[in-house]
Structure formats: structure tokens, C-alpha cells
Amino acid sequence: MTSEIIIDAQPKNISIALLEDKKLVEYQTESREQNFSVGNVYVAKVKKIMPGLNACFVDVGYERDAFLHYLDLGAQYSSFEKYLKQVQSDRQKLYPFERAHRLPDLAKDGSIQNVLKVGQEVLVQIVKEPISTKGPRLTGELSFAGRYMVLVPFGDKVSISAKIRKGEEKARLKQIVSRVKPKNYGVIVRTVAEGKDAEELENELKMLLKRWEDALNNVRTTTSRPELIMEEQSRVVGMLRDLFNPSYENIYINDDKVLEEVKNYVRLIAPEKESIIKRYTGNLPIYDAFDITKQIKSSFGKIVNYKHGAYLIIEHTEAMHVVDVNSGNRTRSENGQEANALEVNLGAADELARQFRLRDMGGIIIIDFIDMKLAEDRQTLYERMCKNMQQDRARHNVLPLSKFGLMQITRQRVRPAMDVNVNETCPTCMGKGTVRSSVLFVEQLERLLDKLVNQAGLKKISLHVHPYVYAYITKGWPFMNLKWKWKLRYGLGTKVVPSQKLGFLQYEFYDKDMQLVDVKDDKFTL
Image (tube, rainbow, N blue to C red; front, side, top):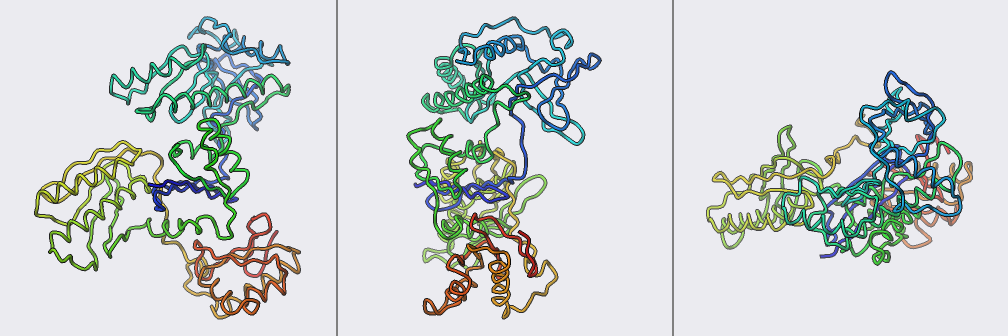
């Protein structure tokens, strides 16, 4: 089985698609406009002490000062304070963290005015985003989260997730981490580390140690305060962290900045796999080139078709997900109704295992398969579903078919539910039910092209249209079709690109930097 990751970085959002044998099995998308600061580490200054609240306000560069309570300073605050002074005192080299001296724990019933004073520098991490009129919430207990573990500077033990229930596995993980972790660090091993080998765990520990060391170097080399010394991983790396597997064969990315971010991440956790990261340079949109756009549109929604005319009806309710398997207009098997039912059900089992991962259908799932009389056929279907679900990263439990022909599955939710609405408001009529004459559509495009080139002065421009419209524009002999007429009239920098994500009478213009040009009703803003 071949596995590939395709990353589509657009100006407003970033999405990641996981393909197995060219089939879409996982899909994530997030907006670039959302500003996430949780996890960022700062060297900041205390602005105001509030003895009545046993807290203080700290300047971390936000419009409103951040809030730090005495209990959030952490038991090892004194150790952090002393080490911070050691780092700042030597600008030539970094004082090794492993040699830092641990001081006694901070008293739980102490007072903040006895520990901090106005103007004092503190090492803090954001744990809660600013909300409305309130600034961020801070902690002095620093931690660095990876996929398999969380690194805790000045921690003193290795903790294993309580969700890992096997005693031998807990002992194995604890032994591996205890052997490789340096002095003065604590580690929390996460649930997803279950079954991972020593090399994977050690590689991630090295990556987390490197992030902490880089943060300390930033403290040493910067003097302005407040100062961001460690920024939480970018959105694409955060998304990739849960998906990446060293067995992947290719990672294609259509943006240079994102490409470098991913390379830096992979160099730390699996340097031998850096060569699989490739820059996509094709003319088609990246998701169109890998047939992902079509799969997204056909895989989400109430009705999902699969092979030989059969289809699934998927309903999401408050309490559970319900799936009905239908044979549709499928031709009956020559071996009779029972063989036909088994074949349709096996195909449904293959498609459903993909749908669970794609939609992240968590909780209780009830599947109404086509009735089968033979016990061996029901057992074959159950084994097929169990085998397919082995590829699923989420914990799950599959029960055999009941006497009513129903299969019950429980599945852990890995991430917020992915809901792609494939039934959208018409982009050309905006739900009014009327559109401009389609005969004049190409003339409208040319008028816009003329304005953008001759009035706005754009010399390189890409026009993205529906594939059917693209076929019309490019039909006929080269140099005689509309595409070449536009090139000769408006310059060779004019390109026409087919895009499967667009509606029939929808279009988009992009400049030379692939930034979307806002074009509305023959008017444009640049």
C-alpha cells in the first residue's frame, strides 16, 4: 500500500489530505486567520501585583496584560528563576540545563508579593487565549507537547498515560524514556505512544529538547522585554504531527514557506525521510492534480456511492451515527441473491472504514447491512470489517452482526468532526435562482481580463474556471482558440487553468504571487 500526504496552502486556509493507494482516507482543514497563542513561551515583565487576588498582571506584548496566579507559578518556580539569571548572565555560551540546580518546591500557601515584584522578569507560557476584555492566562510550569510525549523542564519523573492499561506496556515505555531522558527533565508519555518502538520515542524526545534549547538560546541573545522566545508550532506542523508516519512515500506541498516548515519538522523526528518532501510545481491546483477535489465532493454528504452502483446513506444524529447499505441498481450476481448480498456488504465494509477516518465519526455507529442467511457469510463480513479498521488510529470496538443484521461499532473521536457541506448555495446566483446568460459568460470573462491587464496593470494573471468552461476556451487548433487569442491580446503571462472546486459559471483570478484578485460584478479591488 502506498501512502502520500498532500498539503494545499491557500492564503486563507491550509488543508492536509492523506491518500492510501490514491484514495482519500483522512482530510483536515484549518483557517490561517485564526491566531493561536496557547503554548507560546515568553520572557516577560511583571506590571502589577494584586495581593488581594494573590496574583499579578504580566506584560507579554498583548493589548491587555496577562494574568498569572500564585498557584500557577508552579512548584519549581524558584529553580526557573535561578536558571533564568544564569542564562542571562553569560551572553557567550548557554549554561547547560542538565547542570542547573534544583531548589525546594514553592510553598502552596505562599503569597505572590513575597515571590515577585514589579519589573521582575519571569519565564511564562500562555495556557488560555485572551477572551473579550481579558488578557491571556499564564503559567510558570512550562511544557512542550509532541505527538508521543510531553517534555516538562525541571520535572522529576516519567508519567505514563492512564489510558494505557497494559502493565507490561507501561513498564516498557517507562524504561525506554527513563533511559534516554537527560537530568532535570520530566516526561509525560501520551496514549498514542502505545506500541511505538524506542527509536521513534527517542527521535521525538530529541526534537522537544531541541525546541527547549532553542528557546533558551533566544533568552540569551535577546534583551528586549517582553520577548517571545518559543512560538507554538505552525498550524500545518500541528496538523501534520498527528498524521505523520515514517512509512509515507511522498509529501507534496504547493507553498515554499510551508515546505520549509515541514522539512524542519521532519529533519528533527525522521531526518532520513527528508527526501520524501517535494514541492508541487504543476499548473493544475494541487488537489485537482491528485484527484482529491473530486473525492472530497463525492465522499461527503448524505449519500455516498461506491463500486458497482451500490451506495450508503449516512445520517448523523444527536446520539449516534446511522448507516444504511443499499445495493442500488447493481446487477445481481450469477451465484444468487446470497452471493450478491455478501459482495455488496463487503464493499460497504471497505468504504465505511474509510468514511470513519475521513469524517471522524466518533461515538456509537449502527450499520444496517443487507440481510444474509448464512452464518459463515456474516462471519466473513465481521472479519473484513475488523481487518479494515486496523488502519484506524482511533481506538474502536467492532461487534458481530446481531440477529437483526445490524453491526455496532464504537469509535474514539481523534479530532473535531469534519463536516464538509457539499450542497452549497449557488455561487453564481447566490440562491436567487437566476443567473446571467451563460452564452455571454466568456465575454464577461474577457471584459474582466481586459480591465485587470490594461487598467490594473497586471502582466501575469491566472484565470481559474470550471473544467467544462476550460474545454470550451481551449477547443480548436492551437493559436486559433480563445486561450491563445487572449494570450496574444493581453500578453503571454495570461493563463487559463481548470479547477474542479469551482461551479459551472464560477471563476477566480490570481496574480503572479497566486494571491486571489477580488473581482465582483465587473468591479475589482487590488
